[in-house]
Image (tube, rainbow, N blue to C red; front, side, top):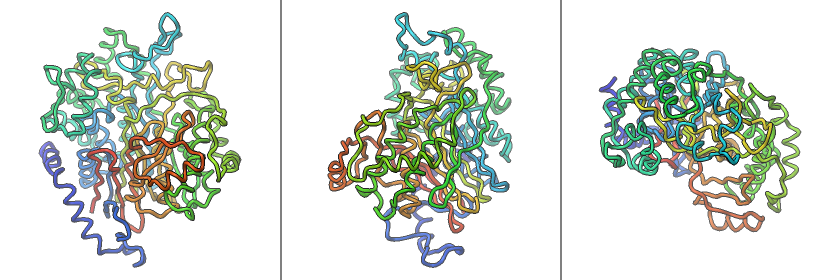
Length: 580
């Protein structure tokens, strides 16, 4: 396996040539299941997805994608590939890939047609939830300590989540799935320009903590540069322990012991009891309908799934197809619905193990009908006219998502995060594992709020791994993205581009995006939206603001017997690979 990983890394430089060859071969073919008019390649567009007949893997990191493809080629299923990729991303994408963070996994079992939502979101350590634990003598929140250092992390869920996914659905040996990550951490990777940039940006935080500096900086405290060789022996030790002991290594075994001992030394909140008490939650996904398709997405404690369904329910009242993709009229309606949904998600959402969440009401037809009636087709409604309860969700765009489908039709959508880039910046010495800073994501400015901190409680998230199913309950689309508060709106637009506007998956992914929040009066736009469209939106009353790129969507589409994959070009190194 170690030699395999080395070959995969060297092959990365040739990947795009391989894809080009595959595309040229497929350009003259049509699916046997599709009429001739529905050729796989349509030359009307300059954007083409990657294709495969026996599976598809898409992620933000080319090495992780290559490993996932290799697991499929060895006979592993989509869950096996997803588990292996989760560990590899902790090595190759340390600002977001993680073993010390948390997330969600949405799984479709092709045999049973069942959909399972695994919730491995971080939980509040008991000590962090004590009165005034996070406030100074004046009662002010200690945001600096809640952002970086040993008091910022929640109790991590990633290792437990990946281990449970494998226990329930995996088919290959556990140690086989972790071997690629172990080899990469032991033998090292070559630093890309993107990784060098991220390490340099985080170096002022990383150097503050001995374990972090040892793990991610050179001995003299300087940052690794592009092209340099970067080994992670401490992370390799942790992965090897998890290979040997399973998920228990992190919560009861060798890795957990190091975490607890160091937390005691430096005044961190996480205790052995916190780790022992942590459990993955297996939840029922939330399900809705859009234009004849079934949309299956993540339930609370994610606020993303119910908000996505609420927006789709509302947009069904409008004929977006007739308006055209990214037209001013279409973007106006979408922005107005985004604005209302962003406000509504401030009501009553929290960890369902602690509070009652009215899911059926949130995604019900009455709210959607009311929201549609509030859209003025001629004028943007000022944000100031919308009066929801303000429950600020402090989430960062430094998350990552990956999607996998295998030849049997099993599908996995995984989104996980450290919170900020490199999370809390805090590594327990000897583990190489970055811990997250999700303690920020509770609501602290309102008493008795649904998202208020409590021992063992999970903080709200906008992570929204999503599946779209055909009427026969087979998977049509697998998608998800990082992006913090923009996640839901980004996924919404990709789904609209595919279903309403019949764009191929690459087109749907590459289209410029918008983002309308509730707290900001401005409509955010990516570059690429034309000046005429911008002027029309301004004439409709929108105050425009050009944003950085939004999200990094990694999606798969399955139709007419062919897998279509699209890796979002908004992040360097993203890659889709099919299996033929």
